[in-house]
Each structure stands twice: as C-alpha cells, then as structure tokens.
Amino acid sequence: MMLMRTDSFRDFDRLTQRLLGDTSRLASMPMDAYREGDAFVIHFDLPGVRADSIDLEVERDVLTVRAARDDATKGRDVVMAERPSGSFSRQLFLGESLDTENISADYADGVLTLRVPVAEQAKPRKISVTEGSGTAGEIRA
Image 1 (tube, rainbow, N blue to C red):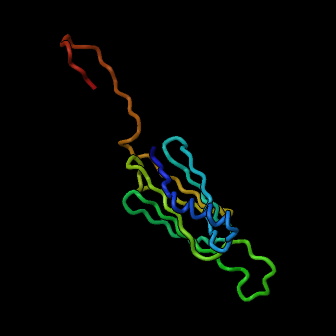
Image 2 (cartoon, rainbow, N blue to C red):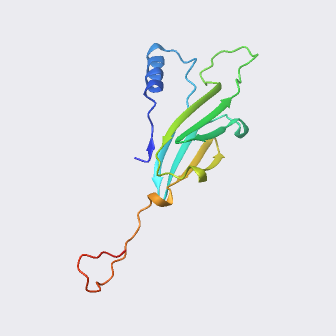
Image 3 (cartoon, rainbow, N blue to C red):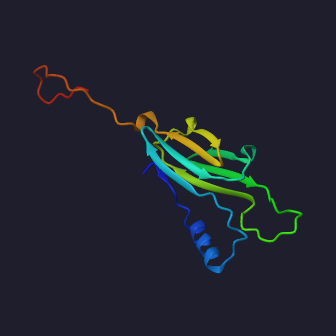
C-alpha cells in the first residue's frame, strides 16, 4: 500500500467522544483518498477555514496537515455551537514509493486537494524482449 492511515488512537478517541456526547473536542478533518493514474489524490473537508491558516509539512514519510477555524461565536450570546473551532491536525503515513518532493496542494470551496505523485522508480516499466543472438540463457532488457 502506498498511502497508509494508522491513527487508531485518534479514531478510538473520536468514537469515545461521540458515545459520551462530548462535541467540544470534535475538530475533525474528514478525508477521501484514491489513486488516479500516477498519483494519489487526497481531499480534506475544511469548511470555514482560511487558506492562510492551512499548514502542510512532510517529514520523512509523514504528511501533516494543520488548519485552524476561527470561533464564530466568540463574544456572542450563543444559542447553539456545534461547529468545531480552533486548531486541528491530521497525519498520513506515505509509502516510500511516493514522490513527496512534488506534492501539489489546491484549496477551493472548503476542500483541500493534495496530489501525491508515484515516484518514477515505483512506476511499472516495460521490458523489451529481443530475439536471441544464439546464446542460450542470456536475457537482455
């Protein structure tokens, strides 16, 4: 697998918060990821987040996405507040076969889209077969 998500402690924490009805710490960053040709495409839902508050960082094989959403209810007489605010982050573990030097990012309509290309050395390649020169056991590529 080229893109791995191993954040079971966070998933357990979110499940516990939902079961206990604690929505105060549910700052989430829902994500879709899929392969499209020679790249992985990752979409993060970040409604209400300004582009300048998004921070992307790759260290070794870990991609970290950080974002912040302002508290729209601050200083107001709040009737209901269900939308999470504040800072939150998400980490993805990228396989060695991905080209982390050439990740592109685009943010439109509250969705952050990342394209992570597959590294050249990980792409399938064709090996040509030539007619033998009469030497048995010799393989040419």
